[in-house]
Amino acid sequence: MNNTAPIMVPPTGNGEFDDANWNPVPFHLREGLHEYIRMGRPTGDFLKAFLSNDLMSAIVRADAASAAGMKETAMFLTWHCPGDSYGSPAKYAAWIKRGGILGITQSQKVEV
Image (cartoon, rainbow, N blue to C red; front, side, top):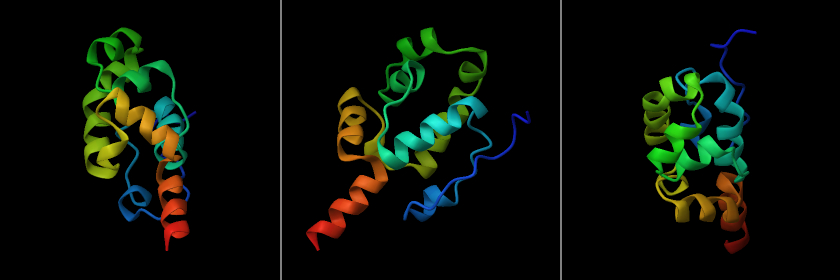
């Protein structure tokens, strides 16, 4: 399997996320991160700690590829993902509760 192959990202309604270059994100984290951002699906322990800004827990839970890609994953989040989807345990939980980008899009359609 080619570990540098880009993930195929379905449209989300968020141009920056749709057009993101996923190559810097470690291959085995791409699907879980994508599903978390797009649909608010809970992640594995490493990504949960990373997205919650719990550096110590993230380091302890990281495999070699995840540890090596932490800077690139942080840059990806900063450049391509909504700021309220990461940064604290409360933001992580709230993002899941609202259903990610799709949940936000659907709630906006209901309010209109």
